[in-house]
Image: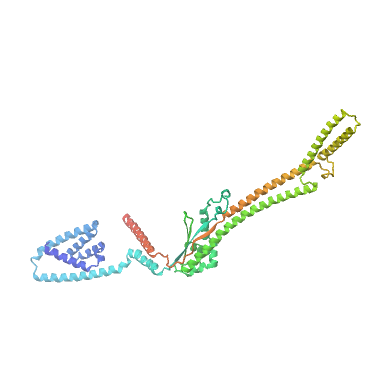
Length: 488
């Protein structure tokens, strides 16, 4: 083939490129169809287009086969043209020129139809239906339609009173003050109460939470009009976040609302109710513990009073201030009389050795000794017998030893009651300290804030995430379809 023929083919190929849309020109399947159409009218241009198809998809055996066939037909057609061109008259050349112009007109009509068909079908392509349309709709919702949500913030911490500052250090150590409690459990209790139905009922009563969630926002972000209490609780939990810092124990409450004022009001209501709850459960536990200790202390105190009354009644009954002292005094009197009798007996024996029985001194000393012996017998009877006397004590026919035994029992009972009362007083003081130690208070670190800018929806993040998910799912779908086609 001459260089002039090659240039002519390249010129027609360039004109074809200009008339063809970029979508068709870069699509191997569309160019393959175009080559088949051109094969009937212009075999040289058809082979050139097939070469373009091979460049776009070099690995397809079908394209190689068609390109080889077109090359063979071009070679055969070139031989026939060389044998006939020498005998053809000049009128034939003008006729060929006219035919060439008609071919070009036909090609123009063909490519215009092809471009129109491709343009009419491009919106029905899978990537348009599965990627572009959903992405545009979602972006429109995020940028234009989605209602803003404002977030108010508050920070709290649960603290215990410092008992070490008001107590003796040894007493505080004995009672356990200064030892840290389970703050993690307290913060988890506060979080559970904030997300509980009791808190929801309180907020519904004082802030009409359901009306705000149903009337605010857009159709996709608001609460449905026929929502149940369970749906309302789930919606409330989704829009109320409670974060706990494990290191410091700070509780952060993040509340969303469709208006900044409502978000601030709702956060303040949650803080006030949570503070009431934490303080109330601490006082309830302390009161219950103290109530039990007070009842036990009252029993011990009553026992002590009964022992005191019994002892006093016994003393009044026997006309004794201290029976033990009275008994000791009687014993001392008895021992003193025995000593005097022994002394008088020795003196009497000495006088009888030198004097007669009728001597005045002997008679007087014998009389004194006889009186001392009678008094000794009387004192011994007072200690051991049940004979009543009216000299020093009135025991109502009861011996002094029995009185002492009864008084000893009463005294032991009184001492035991007194010891029990003392222990009970210590236990009561410890219970008061322990109850004071267990009291917990919710301290506000940061009051409820009034937001100025909406935090939700996060438009850019949502759009990018949606696009990433779309591309991932579309790619997975393409891989599955390609696998199915390959298996067929």
